[in-house]
Image 1 (cartoon, rainbow, N blue to C red):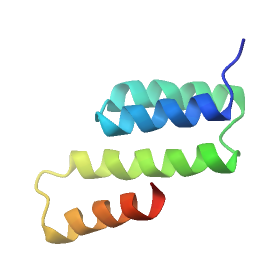
Image 2 (cartoon, rainbow, N blue to C red):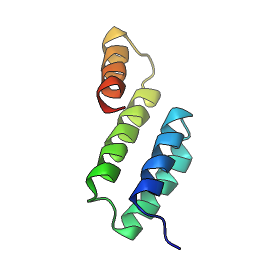
Image 3 (cartoon, one colour):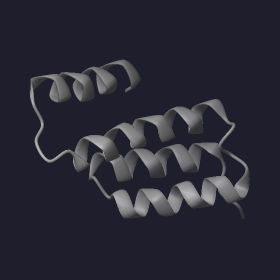
Image 4 (spheres, rainbow, N blue to C red):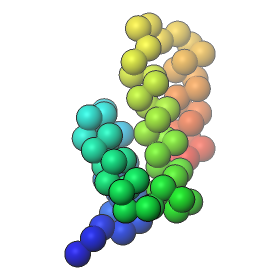
Length: 77
């Protein structure tokens, strides 16, 4: 049985919460192969994961970076 949108969203959210960026990238790859990138709910989760990836790669996070990531999560989930 192939995963659906709900499974992909849940998987991405779980990866984002524990900062499992490598696993999240694998899930993203599966999403692309399955054609779910155009699903609005999956797409929103991908944007959320992307924001966390950028944030986690910053060598130093200042007040602006922390505010942006907090506001992103308050709005989206």
